[in-house]
View 1 (cartoon, rainbow, N blue to C red):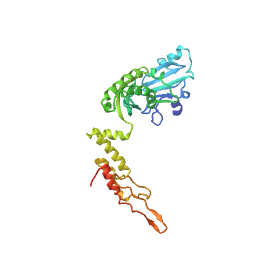
View 2 (cartoon, one colour; view 1 turned 90 degrees about the vertical axis):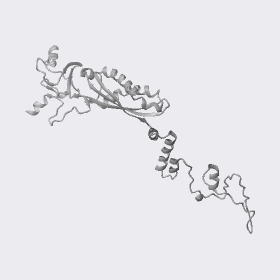
View 3 (cartoon, helix red, strand yellow; view 1 turned 135 degrees about the horizontal axis):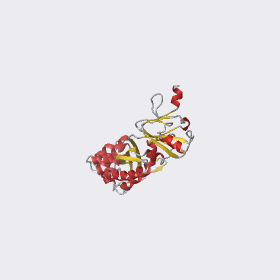
View 4 (cartoon, rainbow, N blue to C red; view 1 turned 180 degrees about the horizontal axis):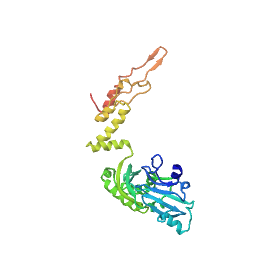
Length: 312
């Protein structure tokens, strides 16, 4: 008996107490094969129920219990208007969430000096006109969720964000949070209002350079470090991750001289020595190697120190 009765109830609540209207669900389309002329519509306090018969909105049911066979029911009045004895098969029932929702829209834009920036915008909204919403969105499955709406409004958000960022230098980007919020709010309020959604607020949750190295340099700059020193410290960190001993010198801003005494120079290679004397090559004779011995060449360390400067 309970199974037969439950089969005639059109609701988002399941027998085990769970709900088909999950936290991220905006619209749930009830399966058509479970809707009969003896169905009892139960609408939860956080929902509205939209009944569409043969492409026409027959009823917008508020929270509560609704019996189709009751004369006061809007669906019953619709059926009597067209002299239907029972619900047509082409009857679609939508349950629309009336609670507050949040969606995150992210993307990539660029500044006036062509620096790529990653952004993320949080949009808070609630459904104001469920009948208008179900007739303005398309979805292939039984659910229309927050992610579907985020994809729907993504071009609008990207356009409004880019209109601000494309005219701002990187150094002034973080002063434009209010301008970006205002632009996105103005664009979305009109767009969402046309499909029955009331925009509550918009918040910028992320606006950072796409390059992680540039992000770290900007963080050092904002800590009060000069930009040249910040760049040098960023390079020092990269060198340190590679276990390069010159990372300390890069961080301190002093020249780095490795142990050049370990460098082996081939016999046929004669390095340039400023002011030095080019050695005279030797020649072989049957009795051995004879010739004028080459003069003493300066060491590689002294040559580099003369070129780049350094200690004595």
